[in-house]
Length: 390
Image (cartoon, rainbow, N blue to C red; front, side, top):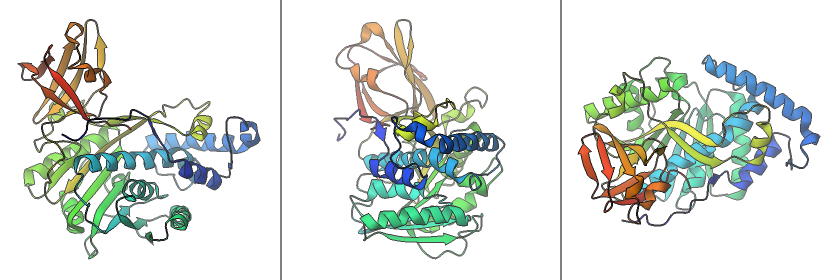
């Protein structure tokens, strides 16, 4: 077992990214003390954000039209979502890419470069990086180019290539280049408008990965997109041609697909500390910005050895009720309710009070009252293997 101590500090956007964003948004040195100096600019961004939200609800893409608002609100959260997934991947598959001299990364539908930046910040300490971004928008690519130029000024060894190209199901049919990581961050909605993602498309993508390469798909935490990934995961498992590395720790059909008459969907909700400028922009908008919400899959050609075994994914928040606490776990082909009566609390199971949605935990001597109902008793040991945050 290797994950023993945890820093519970909430995740934050790297300070230098925050400062670069303020420069691009023409809000240099903005802070809580000098907000009145930027009233007009902030008002414009807030108005654009209202329109963006309305368009998003109608599945209408207007990010390019309201680029500043999209950048101010979505960019930092998208950076952190990608960093969160990459961090968990590093924790659970710590040896993968450990001997890769230069990590080749492709960001499909790269937009303003948030995904590329997130992966760079997670892997830069262990690998040299080569980034390739593809997008159909000249405006978005221009902003990405500005960010990548800034990044290269701090890391001359970084290779960056940006290409304007239509993102379509045929994108990978003639691609010969291979990548260690291929990222789709909020991009599949532009390719597939139906309730199903083509398995043939996924197989084409995997052919463009290196022997140990992976595909990371991150989607909004909406029911439609999340269940679409859940169904894709089940199809991949049935074919046995590739493997799901995350978020599930097993390769059994998703238990949530048939729970409560298709009302459940699996997604992450990870706490973080938004930068001050986001909090300032959010005044009057009153949006929930203190949690990163998304669904995701990490796919590979084959399975790999994990850094630990016998872990369970926590798929709900811990719910406090009279005389007890409970949460739900993902366990192979079923969803399990894990309960601890208040009278059973002791030093062995106190970590139960610290767990949150998305964590991976280990249990010893848990009592299985029923297939779907487990109970923590006085001698039950609870350990947190990985934290979704921090």
